[in-house]
Length: 185
Figure 1 (spheres, helix red, strand yellow):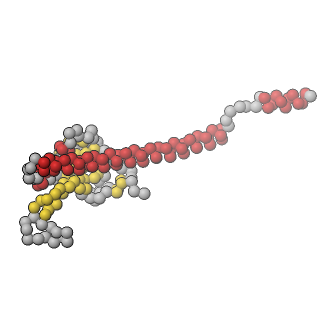
Figure 2 (tube, rainbow, N blue to C red; figure 1 turned 30 degrees about the vertical axis):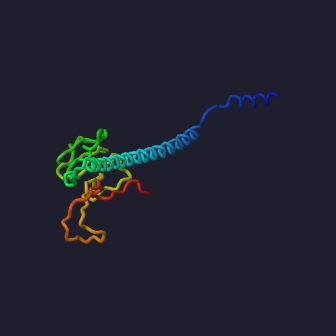
Figure 3 (cartoon, rainbow, N blue to C red; figure 1 turned 60 degrees about the vertical axis):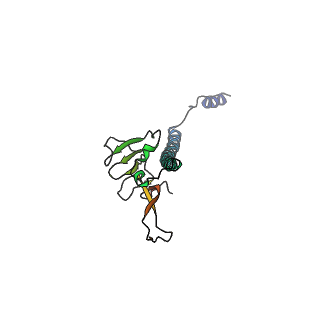
């Protein structure tokens, strides 16, 4: 009976808790899950930035249509050439919080990425990418998307041939200057 009690005592006094190997395995698994979670979080943050940029561009396109409708409803001739020289951000009642202003050339060095600015010298609206892990740089090797107001002209037929009549601006669009690749698999 004495040997039976000591066997029970050994089981009762056995050390409770994790061994070092078990702690290393658990820590490794947690680190892997944290890495995957962080990677997904950064990806979705970039998806949100892209959607924000595209939503702002869509809002600017809508503001352009409203500007043209204003000309039409008041019976004024639409001055497409004049509109093409304007800063599209000026059409918005409330500018986006990440709009840093209009500059001749690039904004000052302190301007943050993930922001809009209007280049007064080239009349181009630029969005500077904030988190560009999944963005391919443009032909200037910059992480940005550039927009320009583009005039369309009457006198150019569907076949691309120019007729004898003088070309008159007949429309305007806010267009991406260079197609961008962002978040493609």
